[in-house]
Structure formats: C-alpha cells, structure tokens
Length: 216
Image 1 (tube, rainbow, N blue to C red):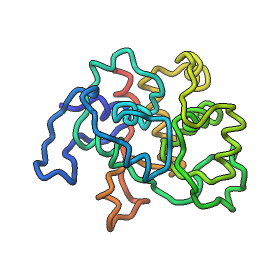
Image 2 (image 1 turned 90 degrees about the horizontal axis):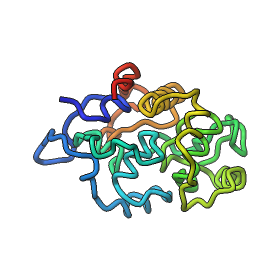
Image 3 (image 1 turned 135 degrees about the horizontal axis):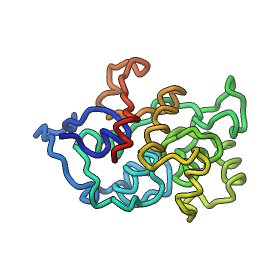
C-alpha cells in the first residue's frame, strides 16, 4: 500500500532511516504534529507553522487541499518532506529570471526561501523551489520587493490563480510537474539527512509519477 505522497511527489514508501523501529506504518497526514521550530531556525525560513503545512508546502501545495483528511503519509515521505529535509546545495537557488545575479555568479545562501517566496517563484517562473532552499541576501530583498509580500505570511489567493500560471493543471498534476522542474534543474531534492552522508547527490534517485498522480 502506498501513501498519498508516493503519488503526489514520487518515490517509494518506506521507514524513517533514523528510526530504531523501522516502522513503515502509513498514517493520516493531519496526524503529523512534530515541532518544526528547530528545523526552521536551522534553515532560517518563515511561513510554515505546523509539520503538516511544511510537508504540503514541500509538495507544492500552498493551500489546504479539500481532501486533506483523506491524505496519508508514510514515515519516509514524512521525514523527507518534513524536518529531515536538507538543502542540496549552498548557493542561491533563485532562478535567473528573478535573481539579482547571473547564473555564473550565484552567491552563498544567507537564509532559507520562505513560504511566500516559494509560492511567488513558482507562479512567476514555473520552477518549484521548496521552502528552506538556499537564498542570498540580494535575491531575498528583490523577491520581497517584487512580490510585495511580507516574508512571514502566506498571501491569500484562490487556487485558480495558481492553476492559471501552471496551465490549468489539477492539484496532483501541479505537484508532480513541480517535481519534474526540481529534477531537471537540480535546484533541490527531497532526501533525508542520513542519505546525504557519504552519498553522491547527482546520483541520488528520485522518481516522479505524473500519470499516477492524476488518479488522486
């Protein structure tokens, strides 16, 4: 049995690599209630207040899905999209279309991409940059100015606005399409911290299941 997120963002279900119990139990998404304060402080980003909201944001869902109470998650997807997520690179992840620097002169990260910035980048460029991804000072200021949005809050808008920018995709297709952008551009990838130790990021597998996502 697969959890909702194996279809939404791809990847096999499994146990948390750091868990001593190696449990593979699939649970309701809304039961995810771990404290994310330390994770936010470590990556220096704002906007997500709960573990459930964090997991949804890293799946490309910026508003609460109508079927949220039907959504499920396995331990591996929970840690990979939640507090176990780590940056794949240290330099600024903002796409060239919006960045304050050239691709050749990307700056080191000063903070993490906020929830509002992640949503704005997706709407403006079609590229999905997960919350917490590396962002330099210049780009952070430019994005705040361009979006005219406080970094600590998520702008209120209808889901129709998002689908307009993404070619009228469904919610599930939107998340799957965003993962494709992530894979192609190598901006970020959802991997547990343990997988980063002694591994080659460029060879880390990540499977997107667009067709399967349509059945959600």
